[in-house]
Image (cartoon, rainbow, N blue to C red; front, side, top):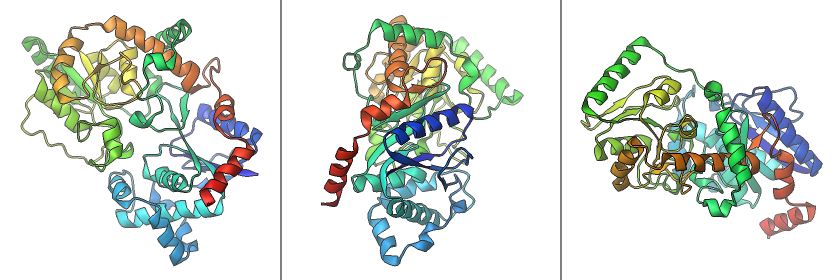
Amino acid sequence: MKNAIVSNLAPINDNDLTFFKEVEKALNSRGFKVHFWSCIYKREFKNYIQMSWDIAQWERFGEKLSNSQKEDAHKLVDKAKWLPRMQKLVKQTNSDIEFLYDVVVYNSYYILLNMNIDVFFSWNNLCPHSGILNDMCNSKGIETFLIERGNFPNTWYLEKGGLLGHSVIANKTFDELGLTQSHFDIGKDFIQNLQFGDNEKYAQNKSEETFVQLQVLKDLAKQADKPIVVMFPPDDGTIGFFPCEHEDRKKTLPNYKNSFDAAKMIAKQSNAIVIFKPHPSFIGWSYDLEDIENIFVIDYDYKYLIEYSDIVASSGSGLGLIALANKKPLISLSVDIIYGKGIAYEAIRPEDIETCVISAYNMRYFNEKLDNLYYFVGYMMKEYMITLSGKELFSAHEFISNNIHDKRNFLKRLLNAVF
């Protein structure tokens, strides 16, 4: 029997568990034994490999490796890529980054050697916890897939690429996607029935002091007839934005060093009042405002900030689509899954920012962009994402049947990896 590893870094609710069990059932039907490498243990997982977000809590598989095996493990990993990402990880009880790096490298290599992996489903292949094993598998010719939560409640990604600019649909045009009226109808129905608070993953700040600060800025913007742009970043630390010079960052954010750099560029290139809401994982991060007077770092409830803003900006956050669904114009500064589809005002280059802010503030072509959003969301729900909410439009069974090779092709691939 072939072996599949399915990793998970997130909490698991009842819908998530149903999704994972469906993935397991689909893989079982293709002749795979499924092993769950997860931060969360569920008794429904028949074969469980312990993991924790806090890497210091991992079992020390490295103690079972010989010195030569440890050397081989390090040869498979790009330390210059992964160590800076380790430094950005939050909620680690051990601050010795070199130690944590070795733990992940050795554990990943131990799993690679002892589980005889035929296919690996990586929960965010840009994050060190699962990304290092993903890179090892790729170097050995082992099939890898992204498995992650989708942009909307009770949806998941299951694809060959990765997040944001690494996605297989990041650079595809509407013509290439083959959109139809059916996609439009599904997308519009889904968006119109979407509950605003269903996507909340983190506790939100709702302090009175911050609320007053926001009202002061709102009054200033109104008096000066300036738009308020609220910037939502993704988790820069786990989606490949570090190290800055690496190709992973350039693939998604080609012309900005990081999300805060993109926000500062909006402030520099326009007259907008820019509010940067830090991602909840940006614990202890510092922000160099460079004496820019029209940018503010404010952490407040994202639902209120969407309603409060004139324009929402994003460097890859899923909240960009949530804002659009709530009919707020979106400025996109990244190459991600909505790029090139006429959904956002695209400011991939700094020199495009001023025009985008003016157009978004005046809602130019916004109805057309909203229609494009309906088409695209319909495509995602019908053809791309997996959903277990209501009708199951696209199942894990279909994905796995269409993408996982049969036994003969697996043998051919494994032989190619060996020779």
